[in-house]
Amino acid sequence: MKKKYLAILLAGIMCSFSFLSGCGKTAEPDEDTVIEEDEEEDDKDRNDDEDDDEDEKPSIPEVVKSIDDKVLESQIDVFLDGRKNWVIPHDEAVLYEGLTYSLSDLNYNGRTELIVTYWEGMGTVSTVYIYEINEKGDGYDLLEWEFEGIDKEQESLPDVGYFSAVSGYYDKDNGIFHYLFKDYYAYSFAHGGCRMHDVSFADGKVIDEVYAKSESKGSDRDEVTTFTGPDGEMSEDAYFTYLGSYPDGYTTKEFWLGNFDADSIYSQNRHIVEDMSDDEIKGILTDSYLLFAGRVTYEDFFEKYISVNSSEQTSEGLFKDMIGSWGLYMTDAEGYVEYYEPDDQYYMTLDVSEDRTMHLEEYLNTDYEYTIEGELLDKADGMLIVQYMPPASDGMAYDFMLLTFTTIDEDGHLVVMCDSWNGNEYYPGSTWFFEKLD
View 1 (cartoon, rainbow, N blue to C red):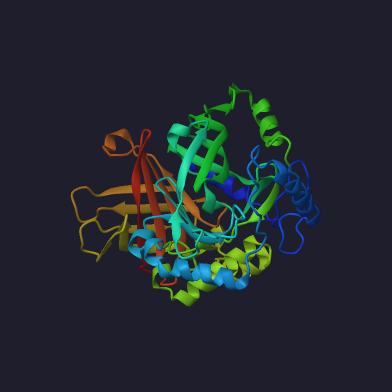
View 2: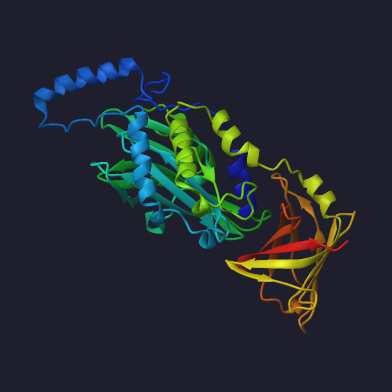
């Protein structure tokens, strides 16, 4: 189920231009703007009228469409002065999946937010830190999250780092920008779903309201999915009708987040942010904000920070490169790294055949030696997987294992991720690195 949700998620990321909208109107961007000039004039006229009766309604915050270059540079310098507080140390970063850094101004108040995200475990538990420049411009604050709506007791964060383009809208009457994020979650291999989050900012907090969710239980053959909206459980048709009409009275548009992927030992760029100079980080954060503000295109950002580091790997190409015999070189179990020689305890050998079968001998130099065999199956992201269920007589501590063959890294090592479950309980995985034996 985990992999299914991630596949659905990645397939849903779309390429669009950066824009937001006013209440019930379509607001196309004008160069680096997010609100059309005629709307701004309407706002001015409305604000002039409201000056006569400010006690009845609070003033609408000024919308800063694009931050001046010098101001932007000074704000990034403030973040860099405190980089030890937000840069994830590399020895921690390798424990996470999908670690990203980005810079934006989601509430358009002229004070940027530095967003640090990652996920871990089954790849569906997101952590999101949002740091915002303070009003004086001489420091920054870590914003608190306030949870509302469906499942608020879960305090589950949206998958901000998964997406490059995200829907958003502007509530012009209240001067609040809203963003519609998804949260793919999994309690076990056979129990998970998706929450829909409405994220906004108020009083120095991030307001996170879940307005709908779907939840599935069971395997692919006997899976049952329930759908929930603001008024409780609903039919599948009603659920998707509701999603299609939300938010009522507003026109959503797409905007870009310049997410820079770093530190993951599985990524192709292998950038370690902790070791970067201030100038390197400043360049990334500057371009990240310029993408958000619509001053550079996603194609430019992609070309500079993603495509040059991305693998053109296909699952078929990976399979052909894997054919042969491999011996365990190193394991990484949640940051605990260990190296191996053929006569060490827990040494493994891996054989990949041309008929797409895999034969793994584990714990070779112990009394617990056993064999894992399976068929290599393609994944859409250019990887391969093997699903293994040990016979009950094996006495294994798990009842399902998923091996993901991710890549052959720049050192020629075959990288394999191991995840396992015992019923609904997930066992934190480890990563195996094999060297070619023939």
